[in-house]
Length: 258
Image (cartoon, rainbow, N blue to C red; front, side):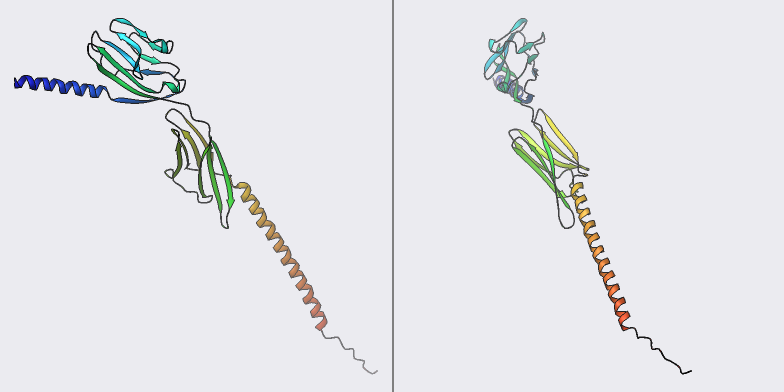
């Protein structure tokens, strides 16, 4: 009797573990408008009646050896081949949710679970630069912007040495907006689990016009100073010469008697 109870407990434990393993949920992310193939991760028992369910309602039913049937709610949106490969076509956001392959007979059993999330592709990004000067260098501000969110990266233009790991990012509504420096470029990236858009722009020359204006200002100031110095030197030279002429002794003429 004890042996029988032990065997029954062992079978119950194995059956429970199989159900737990088969019930593991697999996360899947799909872009809006794409198709999705759901594969069984467990073997269908012989002569079984089973179905793919969405939101606890069967959308496709299978009887081993007999042609499958698709519910009217998903007519034209599901493709099934002879190996019971299950394909969802042209997914919409409303198709997000739990999909379960479940056996109804000879016994109730879950075969596979998928947690499907349908997302729109991310929007394009705009990468802009602003340059301002300080007493000794230039400050560069790079702004990565999309929709109603933005993120910035600031550094000294002459010593912009942030490593790639030093990033600025913001996450909203399942998407991430990221900006970082990679070598001599600034990278602006907008991504989610189904799409990614990047804009890459080199740092060089974004402060060129400001640097050019600053150099020209310095040159013009230098020219003015040099011109003023030349005028001063010339004026001083003229004054000194005039002073020397005034202080020079007059020549005395002596007449000798014949």
